[in-house]
Amino acid sequence: METIIVSSFFLLCVIYEFMTGNYRKGILNVTDLKMAAICAVGITLIQRPIVMVMIFTIAGVFLAPYQGVLAHLEQEYFWWSLLAFVMLEEYFHGLGHWLAHSRTPKLKILRPLHKIFRTAHRPHHLIGNDDEKAQMTVGQTFVEGWMYWFVMPNVWFSFIALYLGLAEIFIYGVIIKGLWALHVHTNWHYDLYLLNHSNPLVRKIFHGLAHVFTFPTTHHHHHSRGPNSAKNLHNFLSLYDWLIYRTLKIETEAPKRYGWRQKEQEKNSAFYRFTRTYDQ
Image (cartoon, rainbow, N blue to C red; front, side, top):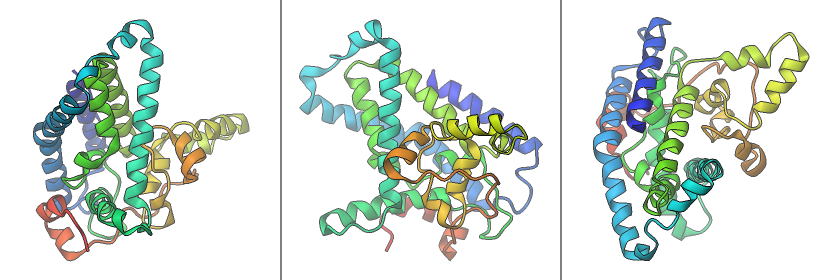
C-alpha cells in the first residue's frame, strides 16, 4: 500500500514539474535521467527487498524471542507509537546523512565506513551539466549510490520495528516520510512566499515552523553549491538540524546554483555513479 501511495504522489510531482518546464534542456542531463531510472528500479525491486530479507534474517538470529513483541502498541497507543516511530526514523536518517557529510574521522577504524557513506551519498548531489542551469527535481529524492540503502541506520531501524510487530505503524510511517521527502525535493518554493510575506506575523509564524519541519526551499539549499550543501540534513524534521547538529539554515531566497562539481565519469556514466562504492 505504501508503495502505491508514494509512487502515485511521485507521478503527480513529475507531471507538475513537466507542466511547469522543469525538464527543459539543460536543467537535467541524460545521465541524471538514467540515474533516476536505475535508482527507482533498484530501490523498488532489488535493494529494498534484499535489505528487508537481510535484516529479517539477522533479526531471526539475534531477536527471535522478541518477534512481534511490540504489536500490542498499535492497538493501545497507535498515535503515540506512530509519533515515536517517525521521530526515531527521522533521527536515524539524519545520523546517517550527517555521517555522509561529516569530515574524515580521527579514529582510523571509522574511516572505511565513513568513505562508504560519503561515496554512496555523493550521487544525490550531482545534478545537471555542472553549470548554473540545473534545477531541483523530485526524481532526486531516491538517487543514491547502491550501497546507501544497505548502510543507512533509519532503514535498519524501520525493518527491525516491523520485525518486532509494528506492521501498521511501519506502513503509515513510511507513507508520511516518503510523501514529505518527495515534497521537499520537488521544485516548489511556496515556503518563500510565507517567509517573505508582507505580514510580519505570518513571517514569524512560518519562520518558527521552519525550525520544526523541513520545507522545500530549505532542503533545496542542501542541494546547492556552497556552504549550505552541508546544512539542512533532515528531510522532515528540521528540529534535529536546529537542536542537535546546529546545521539549520533558513534562507529567504532560492539557491543560485545546484549540484556539486562533477568528475568526467560522473557526467557521462550513470553506471559509474550508481556502482561506485569506495571513492578515493
